[in-house]
Image (cartoon, rainbow, N blue to C red; front, side):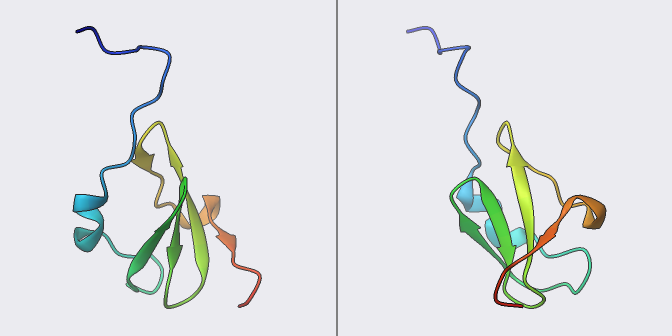
Length: 64
């Protein structure tokens, strides 16, 4: 079967335990199509299945 080229690849949650927030080194939680830092509350986008762990691209979570 041929893969659907129109659908972007999904983020593989298996690698989540190997990633950390680049600002505070906190653990990350997968929230749909974004990663939320459990330490500082920054929210990082996941684009085409690739986490964009760049501090300048992060947004602050509302509760922090």
